[in-house]
Length: 183
Image (tube, rainbow, N blue to C red; front, top):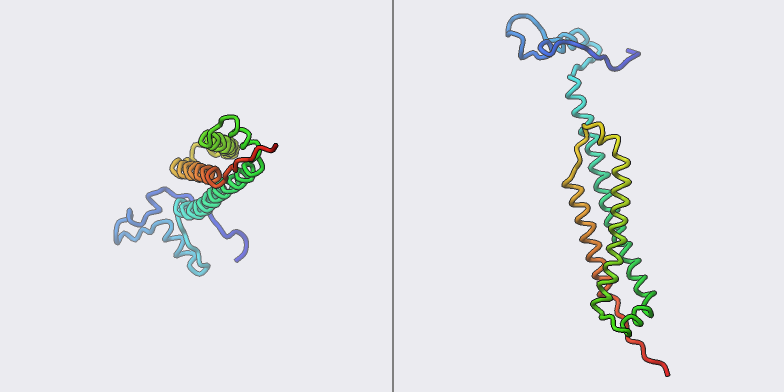
């Protein structure tokens, strides 16, 4: 057989369902009649809704995989930010020691460093959310796309938690040694 591998049939909904035909009436549903007539060619008839459900299941599987990969990338980015924060503290030990010498407490310096890191995280999350919203705007305006608010909340909360822990560990791990006064 050559040519098209898919044929679309239009029939009333009642004619498609064998359950609606009276038993023993000799009347076949459209799908049963087409399948019987083309049995030698291996024709299989299925409703469009069932085929679309199968296609959407595959699409949703891919989307879930990409959401998971995106969340993992977000967490890895947060860990990278923690590494950069530690490096920044190491490079600024002298400036932090001067701040301690003029009266800043260790706790106040730790809070300042943590706030600096969290500002970077929040700006990054805001820019990423804006880019994601812009990319999905055509689908959102179509009205058929549901927004996974739960997944977004878990991703955002996990990222903020990882950033908070990374910031606290960066601040606690780095010690600012007192510098002796040179004479």
